[in-house]
Length: 305
Image 1 (cartoon, rainbow, N blue to C red):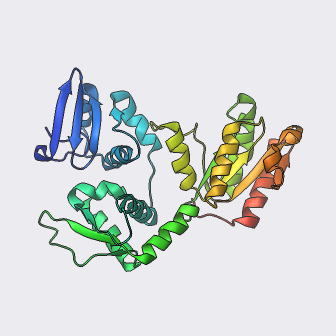
Image 2: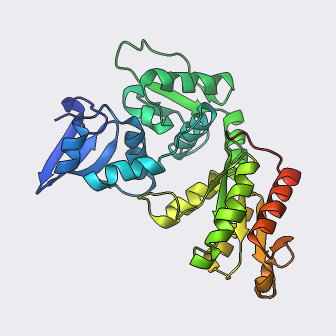
Image 3: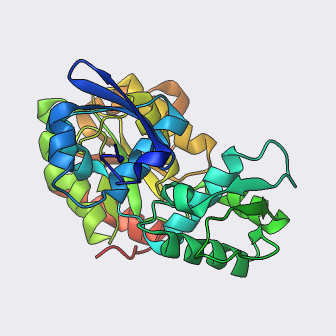
């Protein structure tokens, strides 16, 4: 059978039927399990390259995912829509994971590996590679004839390694802002009236781990999204340990952190973080105004629509 997700032809796909599910191994998507109902639904759709890229990333980050009819659309809601510059960084990081030491060539087959850059087709993947070469981040002797099945031997250049080092310190190619805060009901207004609008008015895209649907392991998702963020907003009201962890992780990567706390909880701020300047707020409107002012003064305006 062809791959239910990317529609790759059967000669590159292995499938084992186990009850109502199939364990699939696709040369493009990687390994995954899929229910019979999801197979039927996918059969009525065009190749889903974003889902293919997600499955491939899950194979690399954790373990083969399971896809059901109930999660087909749910997953899509949480899939990133990477821009061209971000796809270049995503692919360069994929090559980094495959490089045991600097100077080692990495074998890439565009027909199967274009999901590594979250591309929709081989042609887009070739464009991403050429763009990285033009920036002197990758080296390649020559492209083969794209009409034939071919492979590439890519090498990350010294400039590429330097770029990766810088990008790993901060989300320099994104407008995303990771928000760490308590998810308690009494903090809902702080998010809806204070933090979220302040970030959006600054032309950045707020991201909160409980708001966006996803199927990843929660710890992997948090770490990944912090790395993909321009800066972090950490509201420590209610003193949740997870908020301190996420802010500390960001600081370790060199990602700016904006600390916030409600005035009545200021006295409870952890001793180790009291030296940081906090936005102390009484009302959600005050939080929104102060946070937007801080963002504009320290980071500037983003480019999100």
